[in-house]
Every structure is written in structure tokens, then in C-alpha cells.
Amino acid sequence: MRAQVVVNPNSRRGTELGHLVAAELEAHGVAVANGAGAEIDAIVVAGGDGTFVGQIGRALRRGIPMGLIPLGTFNDLARTLAIPLDVHRACAIVAAGCTRPIDVARVNGSYYVNEASIGISSRIARLQQPADKRRFGFFAIAASWLQAFAHARPIRVQVEFDGRCERFKTIQLTVANSNRFGGFVEVAGASIDDGWLDLYAVEIRGLFGAFPLARALLGGGTLDMPGLRRFRSRAFEVYTRHPHGIAADGEPAGKTPARFEVLPKALRVFVPE
Image (tube, rainbow, N blue to C red; front, top):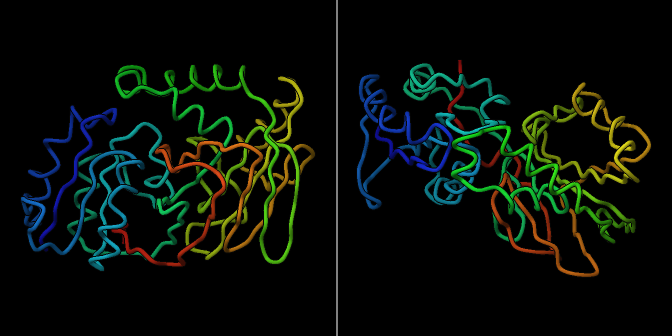
């Protein structure tokens, strides 16, 4: 197998371990190709989920699978697919060649695998600096979260799907492709290969209103509770009174209005046998 390795030097562990990935793959019998025009059988990303989604378009156009060597902060996709955080073991999984088809979501032409959102999460993505994430990891994100929450204001949204139209206010709207996202959220009844998108809209008045929701999120429940709207569809059209930025797996993905859609089992990813 010939693979091209894409390393994100801005990921938390990319600068420390990125140079080991190519050597480890070669040691496992994977030929590492150099140059953008090289003939390859797979793309291997050494970085976080943001780096991974940046290569999905290339993989889909070429019809080749992707490997993930998780070097990010949260590594939601790796945890979803049971890919170990250890570089040597993750490289061995790529070399073994076992793949699994997963759903890919798309918003405003940007692909993602975990979630895309407007509101607090997109503000957090704008506040984060790569240098801070490398140095402080989760604590840098936590600081960004507190800053974003302090300035959170309700957003008027209109969501259209399956012939329905819902209007409401929210401080956070997330369209998830997976059951795991945000670094700690794990939701029962969803998966990354079920062909569905799940939209969650948070309606919280004050800091104390966030505690029950946070407890449900951390507990991995169904999230059927006051203060949270949840809809399921294969596509959502989202409109807001004013344009709001969208973050897809932590990367900028344009502004509203936006169409979110799922591409069922569109991408093959190397996973443990």
C-alpha cells in the first residue's frame, strides 16, 4: 500500500510526534509517497479531527480510504472508531488494511465527521489559538468556553427539514453526524454510520440552567430534557436573522444561512479488526 502522510504541525502533539509517523508506517510495510501528484492508495492524517476533515474531499474524489493517527486535543473521531492514541498502534492499524465505511456530513461545501455548530462552539473555535492549544491543551479550550459563554446571546433560528419548519431561540445549535463530539459529549441512540444527522438546540437562561444539561451531556444520556430541542433528519436548512459563523469539527465553515446534509457511508476509514 502506498500512502501519503499529512501532518498538522499545529496540533497539540503534531510537532512532537509527527516526524515519527512516516517512519513507523514504513516499518510496518506501508510505502510513504511524497509529493501532491504521487500515485497513492490511501491518505493518512497525523493530527486532530480538523486536519482529518480537511483531507476528506481529496479522499472522496480519488475513491481511497483514510487513516488517522490521532495527535489532536480531543480526538473524537479516533475514540468513536476505537483507534488508539498511541502512534505505533495506530500506524499498525493502517498497515493491517481493515476499513469501515462511515457517514460524512457537509455544510456550505465543508465536510465534517463529528459536528458542526453555530453559537458558543463556533465562538470558541474563533477564540482558540493553535499555540495555546499546543501548550495548554484542554485548559485552553476550557478558558475559551468560559469566555464564549459569558458573551453568549440567544440566536433566532429557523430550521427546515422533512417538510417541517421550526422557529426558536438558541445559544447553541449543533448538527451532529456522530454520537461523540465536543470532546466529552457521548449521546445514546446515534452513530457515525446510521445515515442520519441529529440537530441539538440549547435554550438556557442563566448559568444555573446549564448544570442539568451539562450533567446529561457528561453522562451520555438521550438528552430528552427541558432546555434542549432535538430533531433527526438527513438534511437541515438553517436560517438566522443575521449571519452567524459556523464551525465544522473546529474549522471555519462559512456563515448562515446553511444547508447541512449527510453522505451515508461515503468514506472508508482504517479501523481495528
